[in-house]
Each structure stands twice: as C-alpha cells, then as structure tokens.
Length: 375
Image (cartoon, rainbow, N blue to C red):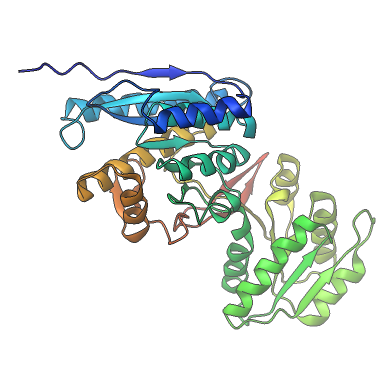
C-alpha cells in the first residue's frame, strides 16, 4: 500500500513578471510541466503580503492555513488532502498577473483573494482562461465580474459592488419619506452624478419620482438657494452626493430654516470631522458605508480574514455537493444555488458572479467615527 505524503504548504512571493515569462509560466502549467504530480488538491491564496496592505493579506493567509488544517484533519475533500499555495499579488495589476501565473502553474483548483480591485480585475482574465475558479475577496469595482463575465470560468466576487450605492440610497430615501417626497442633491462631479443616477434609476423602479434633482457648484460659502428649493418642494428626505464642506452648509441651511428633513450622505462624507459635525447637528444625518460581511469584525484585516475563510468554505461545500473540484462545474454551481458557511452564514451569488447581499448600509455618527446601524 502506497503511503500518501502529508499536504504541502507553498508560499511564493512574486513580483511583476515580464509578459513573455508570464505566458510561458501559464503554458507550462497547462502542459503539465510546472507542477509535480500529486494526489493533493491545491487551494490558492493571492493577497498582498508586502506593502501597505500586507496586514490584510497576512491575516487572510493565517485564516486559510487554519481552515485547511481543520479540513485535512477531518479527511480533506473528496478523499484527498488539501495544500495551500500562497502568492503575493502586491495589490497591483502587474504583480497580480504574476501571482495568478504562479497559482495556475501550481494547478490550484481555486484562487481566493486579490482584495484590491485592480489586481482582481487583471488576474480574473488569466484564471478564467486557465480553468481556475477565482473567488475575489473584498474587491468592489464592478469590472471584477462585469469585465470577465464571458470567460470560460467566470469569476465570483465575495464583496459588494461600488456601483450599487445608488440602490442603497434609494431604499433609505423611501424608508425615511412617509409621503414619498425625496430629493437628490449633487456637486456635479462624476463620482456624485453616478451615484445620483443610480439612485434615480432605483427610485424609478420603485415608482417614486424625486420632487427635486438639484446640482450645485462646489466651493460656495452659502447654499440658502438650494435649501429654499428643498423647502418649496416639501422634501422629506434628501440624498447629498458630494463632499463634507458643501454637505455641512446644506445641513446648516436646513437647520436655519427649521425644516423637517433627514439627510443621507454618500461614502465621501464618512470622515471623522464630518462625524463630529453630525453628532452636534439637530438635523438627522446618516452616511452610506460599504457593508461588511463578517459579523463583529474589529478592523479591515479581521474582515478580510473572515471573508477568505468564508470563500474557502463556500468552495469546499460546493465541491462536496458536486463531487468534483472542476472549476467550470463549481463556477456554475455556486451561481445556481446558495451554500452555507460557518464564517459568513448562507452565501448566494447571482448569475453574474456577484454576491447577493447589501453592498452599502447606512451609518450613524459617533464622536470621530461612523457606525453602521445593525438591522
């Protein structure tokens, strides 16, 4: 009887590879030249292990090391042990491509991580053409899934999407306007207009027409005219898409006229100084923040660690249900039905590979900080 060797932990720190070298690495992997034959099933982690985001990457690595050890102690997956393959993606496009090439060369069945959006978007193309399933953790840019939807193995995203802030704003406005009198105010920047456009589209789908859509010119010292428009239209709830200086003056004007209006700000208002202002304001003010997935996470590192474990548990459960680790099979399976994880509870992906969960949540002001309100 042949004795199976213990699973191996590969830790590979890679930088940017020359383009031809990257292609050669992937081609060698596809031809079976880069990785020795093994009965183990390899799970890849690509994360920033050096640089300013290293704390999150190292926390993700520790979380997956523990998850893999626990799984192997319980018999592995489909009768085989799991080995963790780790690559440093540098939180950048070029180094992410090198990290992806390394995991492909090591024949990883799944690649978890790439928490920086530019890295995830670039790496997804390589995985998708190489029959490796990518589950991006923490990457919120729409293109992580949108730009890679037609790949042979489309990526999955375990995070909210930044372009859904308008949807969250629309839900808040309707909930805080008893008579449906909502208003949208923005500072004309591309950032603000995109959010307001998203909110307007979501309101239209809910059959709500804003009583006012007001652009303003940033940098002024008084916005009484804007506040007068809100007063004349009878607005009950207002979305302000812009920055703290202008938002503070709008709130001040509302208070000066003693208007019964609630204000929701976009995530650009989530600064400590604006929190201190909002705490003292008579007008109720909230802001939208990216919604976390990990209950009780103390910081970003803790959140990324929990999400990485959740991604692993989702893949593991799908593999056990499907009886295979084939990337195309599991990509389709995870988009077709929910899976239950210990770290994150039930996980559902939509047909595009995006997580079916709230992307943004309202936060209330506390001295120097904003705290998401619990449901």
